[in-house]
Length: 70
Image (cartoon, rainbow, N blue to C red; front, side, top):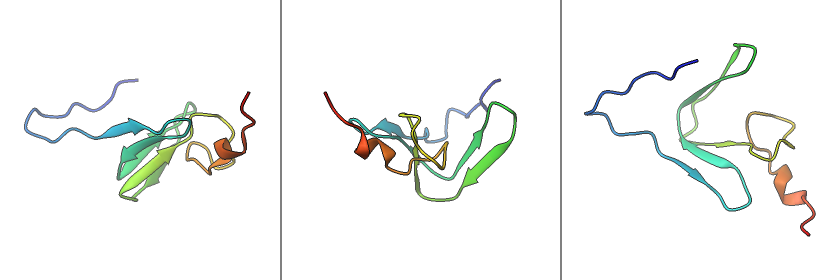
């Protein structure tokens, strides 16, 4: 699957990782799942789960906070 091409005059989408937390993406975001279905969020910043514990995947529900650290 390929991502849409951005022209050189557009501002790039900002994505950053929160330490021990989710991947944050400047929205709006359209997420394509493995089965081809799409989920859209129009929020200004979207948190995507990276711990695979979220009950509302692909979005973060802060389940990573309950993780027991060694």
